[in-house]
Amino acid sequence: MKLVIVDTECANLTSVRFAFERLGIEPVITDDIAEIQAAERVILPGVGTAAAAMRNLQRKQLVQPLRELTQPVLGICLGMQLMTSHSEEGDVDCLGVIPAQTKRMQVGELPLPHMGWNTIEPGNDNPLVNNDESPFCYFVHSYAVAEDEFTIARCRYGDSFAAMIKKDNFIGAQFHPERSGAAGRAILKRFLESGTC
Amino acid sequence: MLAKRIIPCLDVRDGQVVKGVKFRNHEIIGDIQPLARRYAEIGADELVFYDITASADGRTVDKSWVERVAREIDIPFTVAGGIKSIEHAQTLLSMGADKISINSPALMNPDLINELVDEFGQQCVVIGVDSFYNEQSGEYEVHQFTGDETKSRRSAWQTKDWVNEVVQRGAGEIVLNCMNQDGVRQGYDVEQLAAIRAHCNVPLIASGGAGSIAHFVDVFKQANVDGALAASVFHKNIIAMADLKQTLSDKGIAIRPIESF
Image (cartoon, each protein chain N blue to C red):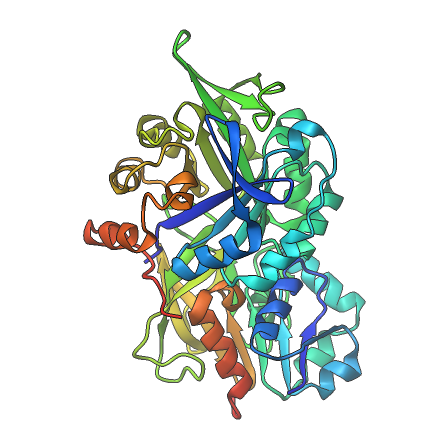
């Protein structure tokens, strides 16, 4: 299995790499377009701000190549938000491979960031989590994608929002599977094993 | 539902886990890696590694254990202690730490908070606050350099004002350590935590005083904190994680069940 983690120059690259190493895979961290295109699975990680991450991808001329990927791609946290059309965080256009919008969370009196372990409720069409399970996953974010037809798992904090989204070969997870214990490990394993995403 | 977090804190000195009473007389508990693994396996929701020597000594300490911990565990962890610069924070985060926690250096240079938030995002930046209840003045005072009793001293800040200040500067989470309670296992300072909670709109973590399961119930029910940090009750097996989580859950507190490995 050739797995590439796109080098977005974000800080959580290491923990994503270690999570796959625990599953017996040696991922390649790279921003080389040819190497990304040749991978069987691609991870788009990210922490920080959408505007900064998009700037990095533009500078590396990765925007169009990432849009055109056809193998299964998993976006994690900010990586998921980068898959949407637009993020309110820095008012920036993102990759647009999933036509959803990333917005500041509306949580009333609850603390933000939404930080900690929360349950996700997967839909029938979720290839990575069975719909009779609602595992606790680890979240850290203040922006989120609203529930829509691309949502394949939702989560509640104030309003409900998309915990996972999917369109074609692109899947996004708002939580951090690499930091979500056995539940996260199972999701990453299913991503590696899933033939058709 | 967002679960309340149980956060074992591993105080680190010279690469080993230690624990003192009221920040003093540190005794060695054990090596970092096996303890981190054990806590992840028994159901800790998160870990904090607090390098208690670094800030007070003003030296750069070997942090290579951060990468070994990141390799080992699949729950989030925070590294605290002596982080004074963007570069230092960058090193720890790139080794795999999920969050960095700043205490004394933020008091010396509050702009550091803004710089860290701008560089790494709010979600990475935790501010640790050592709060001491002064019985004579009746006020909560922020102390600094508490890792070393010869250097530990009062800052100019009152706790409530300092918490407001750091939140305004973009801190993503507050760990409020109530010094009078630390290590003596008489319960969290619920009154102080509830007062801070009332005007703290970022996650708030209680620290200092856990001695029994009832103390965790009280701090979640009465102070509505997002997480509770504790050290000695876990290191000394005074509380079993399974019993703690079961009791909290029975009391109607949202808790992540322990996963089977």
